[in-house]
Length: 238
DNA sequence: AGGGTCAACGCGATGC
DNA sequence: GCATCGCGTTGACCCT
Image 1: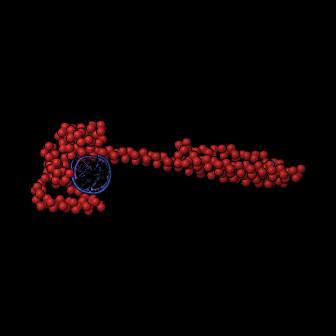
Image 2 (image 1 turned 60 degrees about the horizontal axis):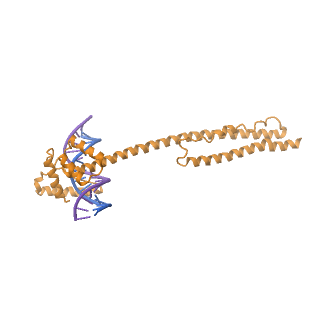
Image 3 (image 1 turned 30 degrees about the vertical axis):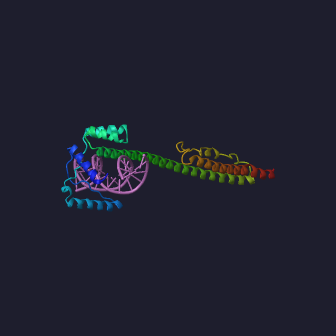
């Protein structure tokens, strides 16, 4: 449809819809597009200045009546897209131009889309916040575990020192060879909400294995110190 | 005055 | 080639 035809259509709709009355309204601009649109505006301004239709043929924008808007809204809820026959029927029922009905549907779809995007954004944001919170909890738990590990190392050192001392007297303090093992049993507590997400399960397993091997190593060392080494020495003395 | 809303415009893309 | 769409934008209008 040419611009002239479009303007004729619009003019017809102004007649059909008395709230419309002439004035300059149809101009446009843009960034990359702005230059382009400035050009267009200039062309139109010049065209008006040249005397086409006395510069008084544009229309002020008028809102659709509540009744029209309600009717269109109902129609939109039934069907988002607009077949030509339906468009024409709606237009005649509402005393609007078919072009107006088409434009209304275009704009309504745009509003609907932006609303959906807002909702989607809210959901993503909530998910993001939840992950941040989980991360905080995990960091906290990691710190606690590091503290426990340090304690265990300290305990191990003490035990080994005791075992070394026992190598010369070997009897007294070698009794509790695994006091720290019970404190390790909580190492694999992962937040239920995170298991299965973002590879946490795999990471959990990996951490578990890593930890268990370290635990096995510690146990081995303790056993070696308290039983093997001490026993060997003890045997030598017995 | 300034911001939000909405009808309308123009353009490029797409399908027929 | 035309109709229609989505998108970006404009300008009128309304509200605070």
